[in-house]
Each structure stands twice: as structure tokens, then as C-alpha cells.
Image (spheres, rainbow, N blue to C red):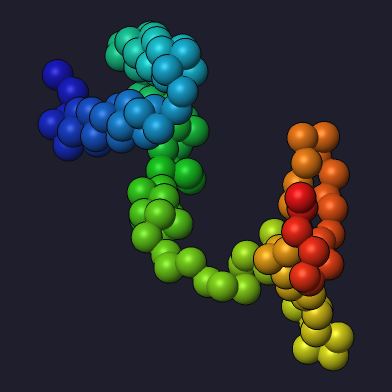
Amino acid sequence: MANPSHVSRVLSLYKRILLLHRFLPIDLRALGDQYVKDEFRRNKTAAPEEVTVFMREWGDEWLSSDPFGEILRRMTRKPRPHQFFGLMGKRSSVNPQITRKRHKINSFVGLMGKRSQEKPGKGLI
């Protein structure tokens, strides 16, 4: 019979991998889940030296870190205004952009989309 602590570690690793697969697209998740199930099933009756290699390759390096912490940190960080400057264009305090407002009080857009300017005092009729 296997050591209970070893069985616990294997089950914990198996559950963590399947939990990480929840973040994958549905087709990749199904493929990954099936692959993991097959791998763990094949190595159920492996020799002890093969088990140590299997556990090292599957878990020690990348699962020992906290992958959920990084995901949560990215999701909960506050947006910073300087991140959006690339989308809006660079700000320059030397040459501020001057926008001219159009006064559309005395203008009329015809059926063809052309704008005709009225002179004050003259009507359209």
C-alpha cells in the first residue's frame, strides 16, 4: 500500500492541475483534462524512482509558485491613467492641441450633405 502522505500529495497535484484547466477555453480544457487523467492513471502503478521523476516534472517547478496569486493580482489592480496614453496619443505640454469649436448656429446641412453658411440677416427663403 502506498504512503498516505504520498497519495495526498498526488491527489492535491491532480486537483490543482484540473483547477488550473478551468481557465482554459472549453476545447483545450477537455484535451488537457483527458491528458492529465491518462498520465496519472498510467503512473498509478509505477516504480518509486519513476514516481519521483513524475512528481518533479508535473509539480515541483511551476505548481510550487502561486499561479492564482498572479491572476488575482492582475484582475484586482487599479487602472493607472498613464496606461491609457498609448491609446489616446502622447501628451505633450510643450505644444498643447488647440481645438476650434465650430459654431453651427447659422449653418444648414442639405440633403446631399453639403453645408451652406448663412449670412446673418439673410434667411434661407
